[in-house]
Image 1 (cartoon, rainbow, N blue to C red):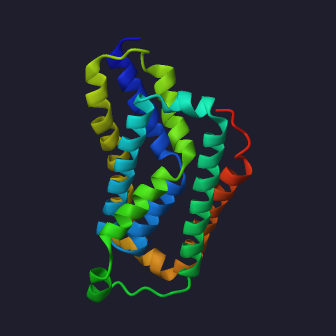
Image 2: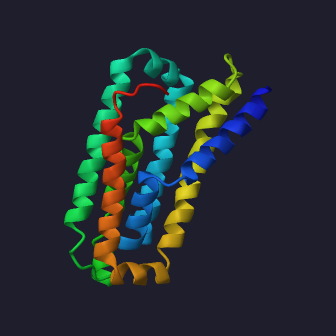
Image 3: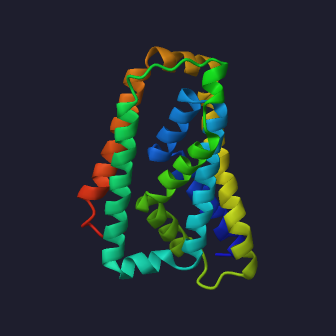
Amino acid sequence: MPASTAVLTILAALLLGAMSPGPSFVIVARNAIGLSRGDGLATALGMGIGGVFFSGIALLGLYTLLATVEWLYIGLKVAGGFYLVYLASKIWRGAAKPLAFDAAQRASTNPRKSFWIGLSTQLSNPKTAVYYGSIFAALLPQHPPLWCYFALPPAIFGIEAGWYTVVALCFSSKRPREIYLQWKAWIDRIAAGAVAVLGLRLIVTAHKVGI
């Protein structure tokens, strides 16, 4: 397969992966609705940076490393699972707190914090790392041309940040915000439950090292 075709195929596969429901989607949507559009966009930016990180280490052979060093893969799954459970507990504890989206409330939002939440959520999920690694290992030539190392990271940033920007923009519009205000406690608890389930699944299946 020519390198250009391989790169396009990799990008298409990663776009499909980003669009599938997961903790990243939940966190971006919740920050966009529950905090502000700026927080949602900052979270999306964090997801994009996380994608660049994974693409870089995938290019350096992450898949081979995780497939070879079993304890490292298990450790990544357990650590990522515990982080997601911790994040879910924070969302759950704040579910009952009312939000008033006036000027003062918007001024108190923290896009920098949202960026780090987005980045840490992306990096805490070893399934994402393995997905990147397996896609690269399966599709990228064993000795790709030099341009691939420069073209892939920014292209992947565009896919990850671009998709989650769309999510943030959609969920930060007026009607979704009104729905969130009306059903905040339930929406937050459902979001927390979804993230917790994903985290617990990582912990429970940590011993299954097959990619």
